[in-house]
Image 1: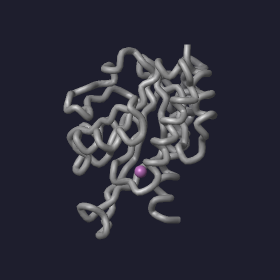
Image 2 (image 1 turned 45 degrees about the horizontal axis):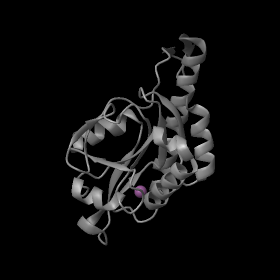
Image 3 (image 1 turned 120 degrees about the vertical axis):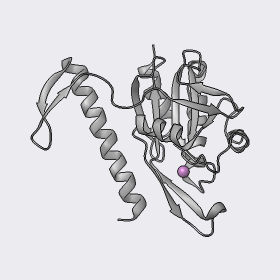
Image 4 (image 1 turned 30 degrees about the vertical axis):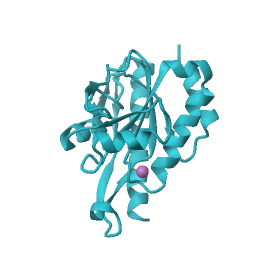
Length: 208
Ligand code: NI
């Protein structure tokens, strides 16, 4: 399996484990069960995907998860120099926003870079304009990006690539997260698989 495949598979396992954990706690209201290593695991009902973040938007302003006017958040981690997957997934997010119709007003699509070294606010601003005027693009210090990615169980890795700008490329998990207005995990999509219509339908089912 390629390095990319390994990383993506690992990411998928973590996301699935996180959802299982969340469902267990959600349905039972908290219980003690036995984890895979035989140790007791206490489920508290706390969602394990998502969390507070502090980042910088495409206009250079500091923002947090509470900066988006009580909207649902549709979040994707990627990078502007991504040759294929990120553009496809961002185009799909834009199409899903269109498929939402009036409900799109309640959703804020967000692109978070995992490549803060190259993705300055100016670079991100130019990039997101290609996809949808509703998109917000976020960057930050490497520490801020690492903290946000960790909260969402998003994984990324810097890989040498002499042919790329700066001599490297990034590998990253391709998940699109749908979060409630109070920043609770609702569902996620694998960008390369879900259609915009499927995404819109699943989001509508989770919205008030
Ligand atoms: Ni990408």
